[in-house]
Image 1: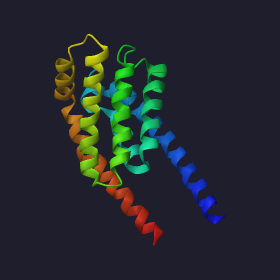
Image 2: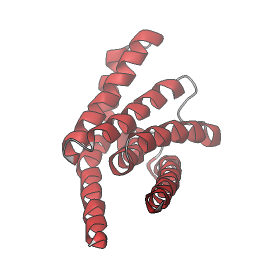
Image 3: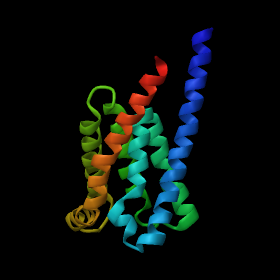
Length: 174
């Protein structure tokens, strides 16, 4: 019976933190666009940052839920991403969160984040190729070229944050 209570608390915390990461994934692009202009979101890629954190800290379910919820809520509140890109961006974010959460148990955080980022760009590229008339290579290459600073921030800061949080968790368990 005691284990059930612990699971309920853990599940509750997962839901709460998923909601917090979703809120941050919606709020951060608004802030970046306000201070960084129209291209601020494309340069810093704030939404994937929090989706990656959710996946790497809480697992694939939280990463996936954060991705799906943040893209939809952001669109309904701000109109970003554009309606024609919403399904593709949602798929990209879902790949980030899902793959990060799957890999976090088996591999180190840097490798998990790296593979997640690559899988997100592959997912949006394949989806655009299959379901859009956009030039996939131009979109993906342009997106990576403009967003390289954000991608590098994700590769550096997200693993550092995850390692720090894991360290704090272990320290508090002892």
